[in-house]
Amino acid sequence: MIALGCAALAGETRHRRVLENGFSFHRSEWMQSDRGPGLSPTVFLVEQPPNAVLAPHFHTQNQFQVVKEGSGTLGAHAVGPGSLHYAGAFTGYGPLVAGPAGLSYFTIRAVYETGANFLPAARDRLPRGPKRNAHGPVHEPLALEALRALASARRVPLIAPQDGLEAYALQLPPWSPLEPIEARGSGQFQLVLAGALETPQRRLQAWESRFLSPGEDAGGCAAGASGVHLLVLQMPAIAPEYSGG
Image 1 (tube, one colour):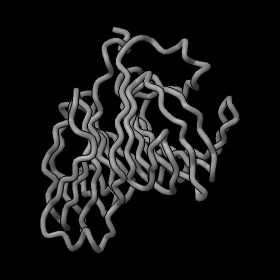
Image 2: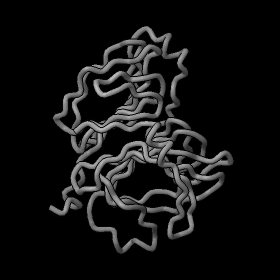
Image 3: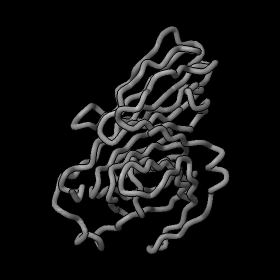
Image 4: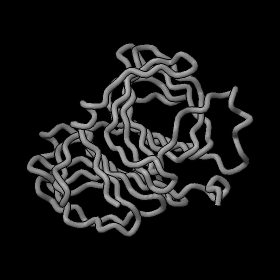
């Protein structure tokens, strides 16, 4: 499976939501697929209002979050553009507190799920099994001038590989080929932070994305005319304790 996330879809789907606990935000879909229990990749953007607080909670699927704009804190960690967080299924995290200018961030999952389970009220719905949080450093998108000036490709580690989880950034000069990267676990997401990625499917601009399931052909991609700053996210398979198999 190859799925694409695009800004055009986001513009068509942006809407306001209010959760059961009263938390209000705007959401836009950047990547949609079916809602089946198998691979059903989703990428959506949350726009959290200035100084708003999203209480601690957990989800039932593994996920990455990448900050797009604004500032704030996630638990004890300060976050800003390019900040990266991973939360495993049934792992509590938060609170997410937006700064004075608000905070927007992508939530990225290989398998669709229905929403947040807030703590401590939902503690009785936490099954036994591994819990995992991982934070990458703030990694801001490069300016186009800096991308154009690159003499060679750079790789920046963000979350060290462990049990199928890994995240890193690639900074490629204009027209440089992207060497095929094998998708593992529950698949791989590629998120453009700056510049453009030319793929066999279409050109991906800033904040657009691509999902590759394991075994999918990852070849035929290259940086665009201004280079590309690309985030590569390897999503681990869900732990057996949570798979229901």
